[in-house]
Amino acid sequence: MERYSYPNFWQIKGFIIPMAVLFSAGLLAALYLPYGQEILMLNSWRTAPFNAFFRLGTFMGESVPYIIAILISLFWRFRHTIMLTTASLMILPYAYWLKDIIRVQRPLTWFRENGLLDQLVVVPHVPLASGFTSFPSGHTMAACTLYTLLAMMLRLRKPVWGFFCAFMIVWVGCSRIFLAQHFLRDVLVGCIVTGK
Image 1 (cartoon, rainbow, N blue to C red):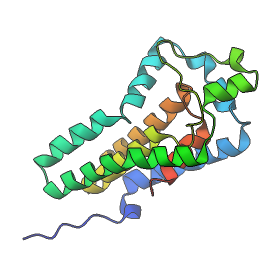
Image 2 (image 1 turned 90 degrees about the vertical axis):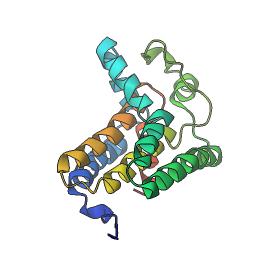
Image 3 (image 1 turned 45 degrees about the vertical axis):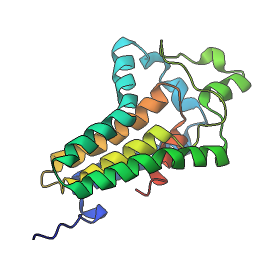
């Protein structure tokens, strides 16, 4: 019987290099830009083709991609099924527990309280969440967990799969900012707290 081992996280070059570069760029932007400015900078981009693209990006951080990955893993390796199922069941309560403890305003609430709501252009037919559940981004946490696990499970003999998994995480994170659901800092910390 062949022993299966997962690659060391840092050995996944097609994944870790783009993630490190993009995370560093996001960190610099978060340090440089005034709070909330990253959302306002995207106002002119909130048009039909981008709206649909980023709405789909948010969808890729929800439960359906987990369900698809779990169903496919049933025909691949049962241990992958167990890992993906466990991750999917743990990430949501973990995210809400953190949100409940930290209690940071959502962009809608923050812009309203700071008198900047009139400057915000929103994506049509996307209800904006309000209140104190912004930090960290649960969608980003879910995406980071799912696509990092997939990157490790695929063993990434071809770097293109690593780039694909990295792209999926970045797409979900950027979509949360684009849809004015989270600030950049929420997204960056969403990646960090999942242990990546």
